[in-house]
Length: 121
Image 1 (cartoon, rainbow, N blue to C red):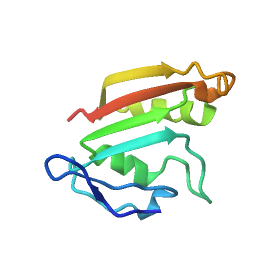
Image 2 (image 1 turned 45 degrees about the vertical axis):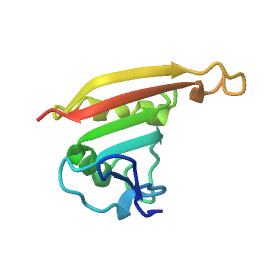
Image 3 (image 1 turned 180 degrees about the vertical axis):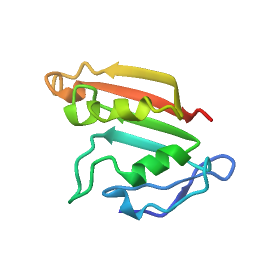
């Protein structure tokens, strides 16, 4: 579901929150926005591949991209390398957080990896 853009403090920036399929994403001018994938765990939607043209286009046209995923979760771990290893992307920063929460200690969600990406052109 697409929600209205909310203004962020600063120089006229705004935040557009999307939940659900990304087919309804508006096109933006190249390098005019950032793209943040929180809890990235791609699943196929109907007959579409989990990482299709809308995501690929948004990553290619974003000024920066942040991907948060659980590296122990197979769905995410199998897709993230193909994103960060693109020749058109540089990864200036990545880090992993490990949570000491007993409730999630034995699940793939106890560890989170964050990758910050920039276009390399």
